[in-house]
Length: 392
Image (cartoon, rainbow, N blue to C red):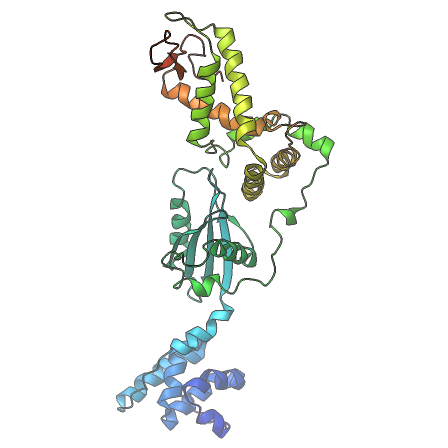
């Protein structure tokens, strides 16, 4: 112990566990001496608190002093720190991330609060703006485990979550929650994750992509979106396909409009033009105004990921394509004129060709003689449609 015996305020000397750290702070350069004074006075509660939570030389002195007090038979009181941990929560660092939507518009939002020990309390919330909250998972994990968990959320994806404002993420989740309506149960985990998801903001924050200030005028949009079908090569859009019923309808319409004599092969040029015409027709049928609105919203979410990875030039192509989709009409600028929208069905046909080894099986009605029942049939287009699966 120090040979010096500095004079301390009686309140400092009698500090209890809750007051100990504050007393050490006010003691400033005399913190070690204050600890030694506590040991001399037998203030085991203050010494134990300093040994547990003080910093530097004061903590070392407190640990030595605590050993001395225990050897005298003095035992520090047991303390419950739940209240203190809860009180520290507002100081936790809050963050949020978003994983770009899949073809159905489902998005993963991850909200976290980082504790003093550098671990995360995290909530993984899968939402769909048209359906509601799909799934909620929560837990405490290390930074490395958090990164792995976000990667596992979409196995095989070639894009990563991007940071978004916490308030915007909470508002997005609140909107999805409202979609459930009365009487529809929320997924398990909502209550456990409530401290991370609430409170939502009173008003809607701007979309984080809108805050980037990337805008184009109409003339530039048409030029930039001229090859918008190429956006399907980006990982964010590679998995976007039309629903199965829309593809089935395309093939059915194609079968109805292709005239082939029994036992003969379809004319390659005629088949190619017929397929192109049906792809355009299917694009116009499927992309009704409400569907286009959902596509634009999902593209805006995905644009954040594109911007983070590929930069402003590619993100502007997404913005231009969104503008062209927004301007689509029934008579002027139909959906089929937007390469990105037409690309949905181009990809679907190419996938069917690849799966069929270069053949496209098209249902066609049998033109049975009068008095006989017509039966459905299929048309093998392996010689009429590109055998390498690239022509669509």
